Length: 139
Image (cartoon, rainbow, N blue to C red; front, top):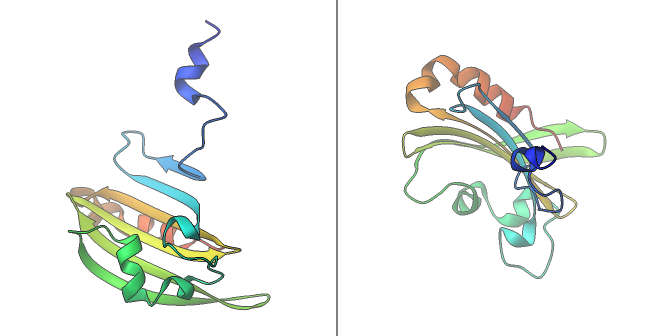
């Protein structure tokens, strides 16, 4: 059937919500990377060039952590790169029985967000691996 692939892959012209997405075989554990223009995250006339342009880690939590979530961890991570240090924000939170680890940075006016999620019941077993995968983001 010529159209069989369309239901699996969709229309190639459609914008994809993820730059990369990996899931466990049952789909309950997911690692994804999203790239968005920073002006879609925070209304401003200027493009953000650094994550700190979106505000402090506490202010940016309003962008990256959904309302009603229980925040367990928020920290700023600086990683040495060729041209100096790059700042990343890391958040770990729970919402709707899902545990999420999220790492975000900004590069060339785009926010790059890596997130790993699993049901809270699986986080004790797989959380270290999922958190490590989210933190491994480099832009």
